Length: 300
Image (cartoon, rainbow, N blue to C red; front, side, top):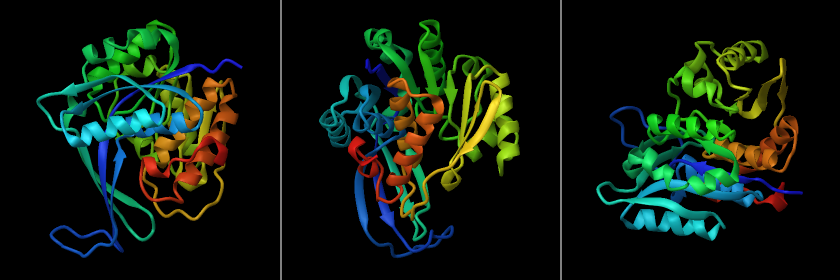
Protein backbone atom coordinates (compact mmCIF):
# COMPACT_ATOMS: atom_id res chain seq x y z
CA UNK A 1 0.00 0.00 0.00
CA UNK A 2 1.35 3.40 -1.02
CA UNK A 3 0.90 5.98 1.74
CA UNK A 4 0.39 9.49 0.38
CA UNK A 5 2.39 12.42 1.77
CA UNK A 6 0.65 15.01 3.95
CA UNK A 7 1.56 18.71 3.98
CA UNK A 8 0.43 20.46 7.17
CA UNK A 9 0.54 24.26 7.12
CA UNK A 10 -0.19 26.26 10.25
CA UNK A 11 0.68 27.54 13.67
CA UNK A 12 3.20 26.47 16.27
CA UNK A 13 2.72 27.70 19.84
CA UNK A 14 3.96 27.04 23.32
CA UNK A 15 0.97 26.23 25.53
CA UNK A 16 1.04 27.34 29.16
CA UNK A 17 -1.67 25.41 30.99
CA UNK A 18 -3.14 25.92 34.46
CA UNK A 19 -5.61 23.45 35.96
CA UNK A 20 -8.31 25.02 38.13
CA UNK A 21 -11.60 24.11 39.79
CA UNK A 22 -13.55 26.84 37.98
CA UNK A 23 -12.79 29.60 35.49
CA UNK A 24 -12.25 33.05 37.09
CA UNK A 25 -14.91 35.71 36.58
CA UNK A 26 -13.79 39.05 35.05
CA UNK A 27 -11.69 40.90 37.62
CA UNK A 28 -11.37 37.83 39.83
CA UNK A 29 -8.09 36.20 40.88
CA UNK A 30 -8.26 32.55 41.87
CA UNK A 31 -5.69 30.05 43.09
CA UNK A 32 -5.16 27.36 40.47
CA UNK A 33 -3.56 23.96 40.63
CA UNK A 34 -1.04 22.19 38.41
CA UNK A 35 0.97 24.14 35.78
CA UNK A 36 2.23 22.57 32.56
CA UNK A 37 4.14 23.94 29.59
CA UNK A 38 3.63 22.03 26.35
CA UNK A 39 4.26 22.39 22.65
CA UNK A 40 1.02 23.36 20.91
CA UNK A 41 -0.54 25.40 18.13
CA UNK A 42 -3.22 23.92 15.90
CA UNK A 43 -0.88 23.39 12.96
CA UNK A 44 1.86 21.72 14.97
CA UNK A 45 -0.68 19.67 16.94
CA UNK A 46 -2.23 18.33 13.75
CA UNK A 47 1.20 17.58 12.28
CA UNK A 48 2.16 15.62 15.42
CA UNK A 49 -1.15 13.75 15.42
CA UNK A 50 -0.70 12.78 11.78
CA UNK A 51 2.92 11.69 12.33
CA UNK A 52 2.20 9.63 15.47
CA UNK A 53 -0.67 7.90 13.72
CA UNK A 54 1.45 6.82 10.76
CA UNK A 55 1.40 9.73 8.30
CA UNK A 56 4.32 10.99 6.20
CA UNK A 57 4.25 14.63 7.30
CA UNK A 58 5.94 17.89 6.28
CA UNK A 59 5.17 20.97 8.39
CA UNK A 60 5.20 24.52 7.03
CA UNK A 61 5.08 27.24 9.69
CA UNK A 62 6.88 30.18 11.26
CA UNK A 63 8.62 30.59 14.62
CA UNK A 64 10.40 33.42 16.41
CA UNK A 65 14.13 33.49 17.05
CA UNK A 66 13.67 32.44 20.68
CA UNK A 67 13.83 29.45 22.99
CA UNK A 68 10.11 28.65 22.55
CA UNK A 69 10.48 28.40 18.77
CA UNK A 70 13.67 26.35 18.92
CA UNK A 71 12.11 23.89 21.38
CA UNK A 72 8.94 23.59 19.30
CA UNK A 73 10.84 22.78 16.10
CA UNK A 74 13.07 20.28 17.87
CA UNK A 75 10.01 18.47 19.19
CA UNK A 76 8.48 18.32 15.71
CA UNK A 77 11.70 16.86 14.34
CA UNK A 78 11.77 14.33 17.17
CA UNK A 79 8.31 13.17 16.01
CA UNK A 80 9.73 12.35 12.57
CA UNK A 81 8.21 15.40 10.87
CA UNK A 82 10.03 17.14 8.01
CA UNK A 83 10.79 20.67 9.31
CA UNK A 84 12.77 21.96 6.31
CA UNK A 85 10.12 24.60 5.60
CA UNK A 86 9.72 26.14 9.04
CA UNK A 87 10.78 29.80 8.67
CA UNK A 88 12.24 32.05 11.39
CA UNK A 89 10.77 35.51 11.97
CA UNK A 90 13.50 37.83 13.26
CA UNK A 91 11.00 40.54 14.24
CA UNK A 92 8.33 38.68 16.24
CA UNK A 93 8.34 36.16 19.10
CA UNK A 94 7.05 32.62 18.73
CA UNK A 95 3.35 32.07 19.38
CA UNK A 96 2.12 31.49 22.92
CA UNK A 97 -1.23 30.20 24.23
CA UNK A 98 -2.50 30.68 27.78
CA UNK A 99 -4.87 27.82 28.63
CA UNK A 100 -7.06 27.32 31.67
CA UNK A 101 -8.63 23.87 32.18
CA UNK A 102 -11.47 23.45 34.68
CA UNK A 103 -12.51 20.41 36.73
CA UNK A 104 -14.88 19.23 33.95
CA UNK A 105 -12.06 19.17 31.39
CA UNK A 106 -13.35 22.20 29.50
CA UNK A 107 -10.79 24.78 28.41
CA UNK A 108 -10.51 28.54 27.94
CA UNK A 109 -7.69 29.72 25.66
CA UNK A 110 -6.08 33.04 24.71
CA UNK A 111 -3.48 32.94 21.91
CA UNK A 112 -0.77 35.52 21.16
CA UNK A 113 0.03 34.58 17.53
CA UNK A 114 3.48 36.17 17.32
CA UNK A 115 5.38 34.83 14.32
CA UNK A 116 2.39 32.72 13.23
CA UNK A 117 0.73 35.97 12.20
CA UNK A 118 3.44 36.67 9.61
CA UNK A 119 3.32 33.36 7.71
CA UNK A 120 3.22 34.53 4.09
CA UNK A 121 2.60 33.07 0.61
CA UNK A 122 6.34 33.46 0.04
CA UNK A 123 7.09 31.24 3.05
CA UNK A 124 4.82 28.59 1.56
CA UNK A 125 6.30 28.87 -1.93
CA UNK A 126 9.58 27.50 -0.58
CA UNK A 127 7.76 24.17 -0.10
CA UNK A 128 6.66 23.77 -3.74
CA UNK A 129 8.46 20.45 -4.11
CA UNK A 130 6.64 19.06 -1.07
CA UNK A 131 3.32 20.36 -2.41
CA UNK A 132 3.95 18.57 -5.70
CA UNK A 133 4.68 15.31 -3.86
CA UNK A 134 1.82 15.53 -1.34
CA UNK A 135 -1.74 14.27 -1.81
CA UNK A 136 -3.30 16.16 1.11
CA UNK A 137 -2.83 19.70 2.42
CA UNK A 138 -4.17 20.26 5.95
CA UNK A 139 -4.67 23.81 7.28
CA UNK A 140 -6.33 25.75 10.13
CA UNK A 141 -6.93 29.47 10.83
CA UNK A 142 -4.20 30.47 13.34
CA UNK A 143 -2.17 31.92 10.44
CA UNK A 144 -3.26 34.81 8.18
CA UNK A 145 -6.39 34.01 6.16
CA UNK A 146 -4.96 35.58 2.94
CA UNK A 147 -2.10 33.04 3.19
CA UNK A 148 -4.58 30.20 3.76
CA UNK A 149 -6.55 31.37 0.69
CA UNK A 150 -3.37 31.52 -1.40
CA UNK A 151 -2.29 28.01 -0.39
CA UNK A 152 -5.76 26.55 -1.00
CA UNK A 153 -5.83 28.09 -4.47
CA UNK A 154 -2.34 26.83 -5.38
CA UNK A 155 -3.06 23.34 -4.01
CA UNK A 156 -6.44 23.13 -5.78
CA UNK A 157 -4.82 24.15 -9.08
CA UNK A 158 -2.40 21.24 -8.64
CA UNK A 159 -5.36 18.91 -7.93
CA UNK A 160 -4.33 18.36 -4.32
CA UNK A 161 -6.97 17.62 -1.68
CA UNK A 162 -7.23 20.60 0.67
CA UNK A 163 -8.60 19.87 4.15
CA UNK A 164 -9.47 22.91 6.28
CA UNK A 165 -10.15 22.85 10.00
CA UNK A 166 -11.77 26.33 10.27
CA UNK A 167 -10.56 27.04 13.80
CA UNK A 168 -10.50 29.44 15.48
CA UNK A 169 -13.87 30.43 14.02
CA UNK A 170 -13.78 33.04 11.26
CA UNK A 171 -15.80 34.08 8.21
CA UNK A 172 -14.49 32.52 5.00
CA UNK A 173 -14.74 33.68 1.40
CA UNK A 174 -16.67 31.71 -1.19
CA UNK A 175 -13.47 31.44 -3.22
CA UNK A 176 -11.70 29.66 -0.36
CA UNK A 177 -14.62 27.27 0.13
CA UNK A 178 -14.62 26.40 -3.60
CA UNK A 179 -10.98 25.30 -3.32
CA UNK A 180 -11.61 22.87 -0.44
CA UNK A 181 -11.99 19.11 -0.68
CA UNK A 182 -13.08 18.76 2.94
CA UNK A 183 -13.97 21.09 5.83
CA UNK A 184 -14.23 20.12 9.52
CA UNK A 185 -15.95 22.81 11.61
CA UNK A 186 -17.30 22.15 15.09
CA UNK A 187 -20.84 23.30 15.94
CA UNK A 188 -19.75 26.87 16.82
CA UNK A 189 -17.64 27.26 13.69
CA UNK A 190 -20.39 25.80 11.50
CA UNK A 191 -22.86 28.35 12.87
CA UNK A 192 -20.50 31.25 12.13
CA UNK A 193 -19.91 29.99 8.59
CA UNK A 194 -23.56 29.30 7.74
CA UNK A 195 -25.82 31.16 10.17
CA UNK A 196 -27.39 27.84 11.21
CA UNK A 197 -27.25 26.96 14.92
CA UNK A 198 -26.15 23.31 15.04
CA UNK A 199 -27.86 21.39 17.84
CA UNK A 200 -28.86 18.08 16.27
CA UNK A 201 -28.69 16.00 13.09
CA UNK A 202 -31.24 18.02 11.10
CA UNK A 203 -29.60 21.39 11.86
CA UNK A 204 -26.19 19.86 11.10
CA UNK A 205 -27.52 18.78 7.70
CA UNK A 206 -28.79 22.29 6.97
CA UNK A 207 -25.44 23.84 7.88
CA UNK A 208 -23.42 21.21 6.01
CA UNK A 209 -25.59 21.60 2.91
CA UNK A 210 -24.84 25.34 2.78
CA UNK A 211 -21.09 24.63 2.81
CA UNK A 212 -21.45 21.82 0.26
CA UNK A 213 -23.45 24.08 -2.06
CA UNK A 214 -20.58 26.60 -1.94
CA UNK A 215 -18.29 23.96 -3.44
CA UNK A 216 -16.87 21.92 -0.55
CA UNK A 217 -16.95 18.27 -1.61
CA UNK A 218 -17.18 16.70 1.87
CA UNK A 219 -18.40 18.38 5.07
CA UNK A 220 -17.75 16.96 8.55
CA UNK A 221 -19.17 18.79 11.57
CA UNK A 222 -17.54 17.61 14.78
CA UNK A 223 -20.04 17.45 17.65
CA UNK A 224 -17.90 16.67 20.69
CA UNK A 225 -18.88 13.54 22.60
CA UNK A 226 -21.79 12.94 20.17
CA UNK A 227 -19.34 12.16 17.38
CA UNK A 228 -19.12 13.62 13.88
CA UNK A 229 -21.76 14.51 11.30
CA UNK A 230 -20.84 13.58 7.70
CA UNK A 231 -22.32 14.91 4.47
CA UNK A 232 -20.96 13.32 1.30
CA UNK A 233 -22.53 12.68 -2.11
CA UNK A 234 -25.97 13.69 -0.90
CA UNK A 235 -26.00 11.22 2.01
CA UNK A 236 -25.51 12.12 5.66
CA UNK A 237 -25.14 10.45 9.05
CA UNK A 238 -23.74 10.96 12.54
CA UNK A 239 -20.82 8.67 13.27
CA UNK A 240 -20.74 8.18 17.02
CA UNK A 241 -17.60 8.60 19.12
CA UNK A 242 -16.53 6.09 21.82
CA UNK A 243 -17.75 7.00 25.32
CA UNK A 244 -14.91 8.11 27.60
CA UNK A 245 -14.39 10.23 30.73
CA UNK A 246 -12.90 13.47 29.43
CA UNK A 247 -10.39 15.31 31.62
CA UNK A 248 -9.00 17.80 29.05
CA UNK A 249 -10.47 18.56 25.63
CA UNK A 250 -7.43 20.59 24.48
CA UNK A 251 -6.30 19.38 21.02
CA UNK A 252 -9.14 16.87 20.62
CA UNK A 253 -10.11 18.60 17.37
CA UNK A 254 -6.48 18.69 16.25
CA UNK A 255 -6.09 14.98 16.95
CA UNK A 256 -9.29 14.30 14.98
CA UNK A 257 -8.05 16.25 11.96
CA UNK A 258 -4.58 14.73 11.94
CA UNK A 259 -6.01 11.23 12.28
CA UNK A 260 -8.64 11.84 9.60
CA UNK A 261 -6.08 12.89 6.99
CA UNK A 262 -3.79 9.96 7.82
CA UNK A 263 -6.62 7.48 7.29
CA UNK A 264 -7.59 9.15 4.01
CA UNK A 265 -3.94 9.11 2.89
CA UNK A 266 -3.95 5.35 3.41
CA UNK A 267 -6.93 4.91 1.10
CA UNK A 268 -9.61 4.39 3.75
CA UNK A 269 -13.15 5.53 2.97
CA UNK A 270 -14.35 8.77 4.49
CA UNK A 271 -16.55 6.85 6.93
CA UNK A 272 -13.69 4.55 8.00
CA UNK A 273 -11.48 7.62 8.37
CA UNK A 274 -13.99 9.31 10.70
CA UNK A 275 -14.26 6.16 12.85
CA UNK A 276 -10.45 6.15 13.14
CA UNK A 277 -10.36 9.90 13.91
CA UNK A 278 -13.11 9.57 16.55
CA UNK A 279 -11.10 6.85 18.31
CA UNK A 280 -7.93 8.95 18.32
CA UNK A 281 -9.71 12.07 19.59
CA UNK A 282 -11.49 10.07 22.31
CA UNK A 283 -8.14 8.87 23.63
CA UNK A 284 -6.70 12.40 23.58
CA UNK A 285 -9.41 13.85 25.88
CA UNK A 286 -8.48 11.35 28.61
CA UNK A 287 -5.04 13.02 28.90
CA UNK A 288 -3.73 16.45 29.88
CA UNK A 289 -2.18 18.78 27.34
CA UNK A 290 -2.08 19.34 23.58
CA UNK A 291 0.62 17.37 21.76
CA UNK A 292 1.28 15.37 24.92
CA UNK A 293 -2.27 13.95 24.73
CA UNK A 294 -2.05 12.71 21.13
CA UNK A 295 -2.09 8.89 20.89
CA UNK A 296 0.23 6.69 18.84
CA UNK A 297 -0.94 4.29 16.12
CA UNK A 298 -0.48 1.22 18.30
CA UNK A 299 -3.02 2.64 20.79
CA UNK A 300 -5.89 2.92 18.30
